[in-house]
Image (tube, rainbow, N blue to C red; front, side, top):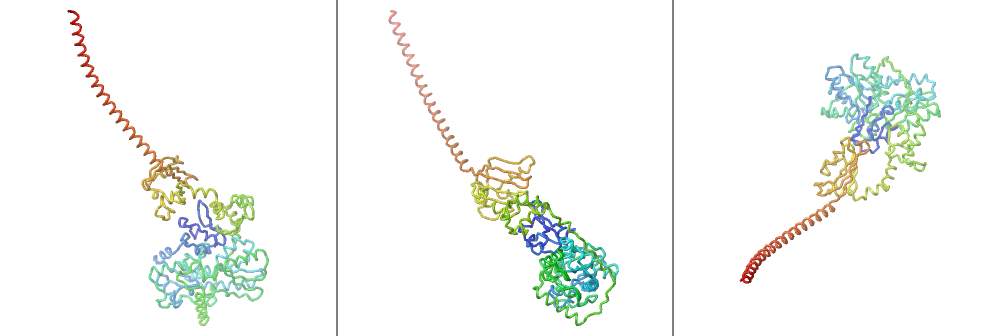
Amino acid sequence: MKFIEFHSEKCDECFKCLRFCPTKAIAFTRVKRHIVDDLCIKCGQCLVQCKQGALTIYKDTNRVKTMIASRQKVAVSLAPSFAGVFQMNAPGQMATALNQVGFDIVEETARGAEIVSEAYDKVIKSSHMKNIITSCCTSSMYLLQHNYGKSTDTAIPVVSPMIAHGRDMKARYGNIYTVFIGPCIAKKAEAAEFDDAIDAVMTFKELEEWFDEKNIELSGLESGSFDTPATMRGRAFPVGGSLDVEGAYQYLHLEGIDDCKSFLDAVECDEITGFCAELNICSGGCLNGPEIPLQSPSTFSRMEKLLKYVKKTESEEPDVAIPEIETKRLFKDMTYVNQPVDENQVYNILMDMEKYTEQDQINCGACGYSSCYDKAVAVVKGYSDSDMCLDRLKHKVESLQSIIFDNSPNAICILDDEQRIQEINPSFMRIFNEDKIKLDGWPIHAVIGHDIFEILRLPDKTSISQKLYLESVDKTFFINLLKIDDSKTYVGIFTDITYEEQSIEEMNHMKSKTLDTVQEVIENQMRVAQEIASLLGETTAETKIGLNKLRDIVLGEEGR
């Protein structure tokens, strides 16, 4: 099950999430963008870095509300870091708030942390391993299993405090629905691995949203109490240093992905001996998890508040009975998800990316990968495309093709599969966008005022070439429209022939007037000719009559 969803329609391709992803578990291709679940360690860094809301987590809030409404007894395991990250005057106000939203039992996961600590003590005292790694941080355990297969037996084979507390509550209360609430996304995935401990996981942000929905102001509530007391050592888990490592091991408290990976690299290569390391993927530990409340105080303020809570526990240390529950677990070598690829394929991809020499591999990191080689490996695995390279795109922009595109007198537009504008050249902007607004993402018919592109959606149509008058700009164009890349891209080239059309129209008008004039002259000439002919006809007839008469007279006189 995926616990982080990628909404690609909201992504602006800044690749920031991929740059911060420690295991490069995000695939960016022309076809799809998604989380590669087998690589993801659920650290939530991608979620923290994405400002467009393209990444979201799977939420259990509605499931929890449904269980509360069903009258099923619902119990909470609350992560110790709550005391530092929420804005309240006393930690007991959180217990009151959780009771108000409907939880029947409210306990601190610190109780589970105490159970785990005792299990750790036993393992550490009896261990003969070169190095030991704690198993509380779920993300660090995913990192270990996915990337450091030889070192999985170094991890203490004990469940996390969340799982221990979930089993503890089910053992004590019987048929209950258990909910863990904390700052960590990885806990959602971990809970799904064990079907006998935690039934649902909510984050602190989810809880904050629920409080806002219920108009609950923590600082205005009375201070309540948790149903079962917790120890100082359990509550101090988020700040580290809760382990008894006297003897053969040197204790290390590591925070942040870089320090964790450096330590694991050393263990994997068998470079070090005698360390007991508490790994925390988040810088600042659980006090700086990806899902801390939006209204959380600053990092050191959180630390101060939690330490005050821990110190208060020290002065009134409760007598907590630790139950006998199963705490053992195993960690698996899952490095099969990171198997090496064929070097010939990588080489071919580098050639396709125009990285012909090592000097061409500038390793700018803009694509999200630390090196061009890593980028090529991702392409081979199907997690990226070779044309998603800023350096390559830069060279394309500077190429002759780009010069032609930018300086062409023809209006050119490039559309996506939904015929929405992806790119336009300056001529298109000048002709169709006098208001100079941002046209990215606009449907083309809304810009040019015509649905001529729709014809290209027909299966048998791959291109259109014709003359077209567009009333929206009062111009006539000869258009060439193309459908390429299996209907994923459309290209339109608009050649303005308005002047030529006007010249032809004027010429045709002149010809028409000339013909009319000639016709009129001809008609006038014909009329005059007819009139002349008519007059000539009448005169000839009269002359003929007169001459005939004269002849008759002449002939008559001769006969006498």
